[in-house]
Length: 161
Length: 194
Image (tube, rainbow over all chains, first blue to last red):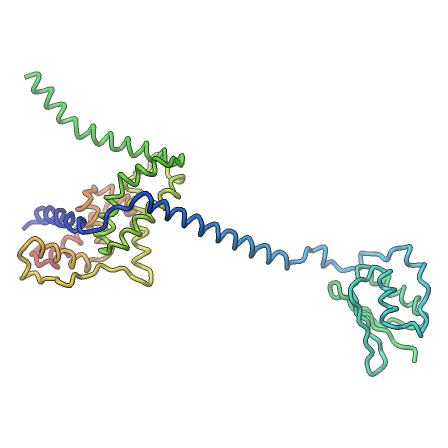
């Protein structure tokens, strides 16, 4: 048998094999597949949008993480706060005063074994301004250092005694 | 004599007219698909569903896999119709989608391979037509995937070399060489002397 005869025979045999196969798909089956695909795609889109929203909500806007030195203490507050006496040097008192200077959030105060007092708060005011204001305000209680990390400002004071 | 000549001319022109009309139908169908016309999609399914199913079944030799592949082909065609141009041959384009889907299926973990029939007969014992068909199925199972693609398109769907090349997205020379190699291999596997 030459190639031509073989290929003719091959065509008819392939036709017989094809007849043993499935029926062509119905329009309804294809439409249901199209619908399923649409639903799956929509779900993925919603999931991707949700994930993107969650991710972006964790990313701070650059303006929120800019160092606070460009911000200023309200002028009105700067001169209206009387200095704290030594006896008034408590967490509550400092928290109240810091609020006047634009420092917000929960403030904690701690004292180490050397008697150094550290105060941590969240500031939106200029830290240099705060330092000088505090130095004057505390009247003799020198501010040893101010450490700025994002919004957290840590003030360290040396106690009088 | 005039009547006879006219009749002969009409009969000779008929195949050309049919080819033209098929091409026109395809072009019209494709342009309507590009416009997302639902009735055109139904026409496409009715027109090409049988051919695609035949090819998918002969290539994959699995009814469920073939049905899935054909349905995915139509879904892909509906989604991708907007990317076609007026120069696109509808038939070749559909076969191209089908074979891409079949290749993906074959590559996946649940590898779809042609199953050798349980009652496979050896070439020496093949006497009846049914035996020859079983023998051919077994031989197709042993062919390379790309060779089987060419065989199915060229000898089942009777596509010419250029249409086959377009459907498989390969050069025409490659179609010819694969056809030659596939036929030789099939003849050997079926116990024919090449």
